[in-house]
Length: 343
Image (cartoon, rainbow, N blue to C red; front, side, top):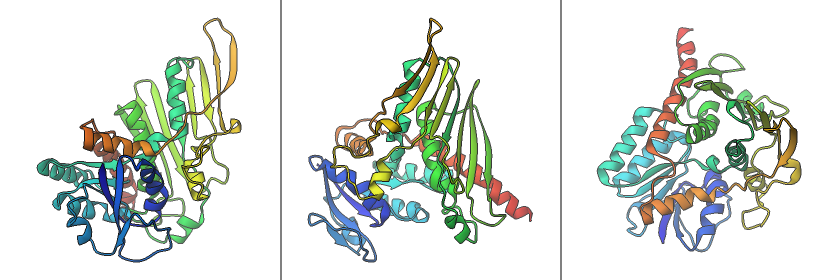
C-alpha cells in the first residue's frame, strides 16, 4: 500500500484528486488531509482531517504528500515536505520559475525522495484520441495541430484588477496544453509567444497563443477567457487529411456536476462528441468518418506514481519535461513583465 496525505482541502483535492485516488483502495490509503480552515466539502470517515501540519510530518506511515494549495505556495510546501522526508506530488503549475523547479528536483535527489508534477490532462479523452488518429497513419505526415482551451468567463479577468504570475491564464491553463505538447511531441525547435492582457496593461493575463515548431510541423495552443463559442478542442492537419475533435474531455464536466468516476459512463463521450476524420486513402478514395473517443482517466496519474514508488517504475512525468514546461511559461510571461516595466 502507498499511504498518502493531502496538503490542502479545496477544489483541487476534492474535485481532481480524491475521486480518483479513492478508487484505488487496493493500492492507496488516504490517511490524512490538512487544511488550516474548515470548509463545506464532503468528508470521509476513513480519512483524518487536521489543521496541524505537524500531523503530516510526524506520521511515519505517510509516504507521499500531495500539494494542492494555491499555486503561489507550491514551492514552499513542496520544499517543506521534502525536508521532512516525504515524497511529493505537486499540483500544476509546479513552480513559478525554472530555478525554483530545479532546486526542488535537486533537493529530492539529495534526500533520495520522489517529487513530480500532477499533469492529469495527459489522460484527457480528446488528447488520447488525437494520438490514436495520428498513429493510425491515415492523415499521413502531420503538418499542423491546433489545440484550443477556451472559456467564456469574462467575469474572471474583469474582476482581477492587477497582474500576477500565479493568477495568469498562462500559468493556470497553458500548463495543461504545453505539457500535452511536450509529453507527446517532445522539445520543439523553436517557439513563438503571443501572451496578452486583453483588458489592458497591468491587468490579468487572459489570452495566450503559442506556436511550437518541429521542422515543417507547427503546433499551436490557443486560449482565451472571452470565447463565447469554443473553438474545436483539437484540429489536426496532415498531408492526406484532417481530424477535428470539437468537444473537450468530459471528466471535468462530470466532476463539476458531482457525477463521480464510480459511474460506468463517467467521462465517456457520446456519439455526438466523437471527432470527425476526413482523409484520402492510398487508392484515392475519399473518407469521412466518426472516430470513437478513447477513454480518459485521471486515475492513471496515481497509478503511475504508485508504480514508481512501490515498484520502481520510471516517472510518468519526467523532471526534464517539467523543467522545460516551466521555462516556456516563464519565457511567455516575461512579455507582460517587460511591457509593464517599459511604461
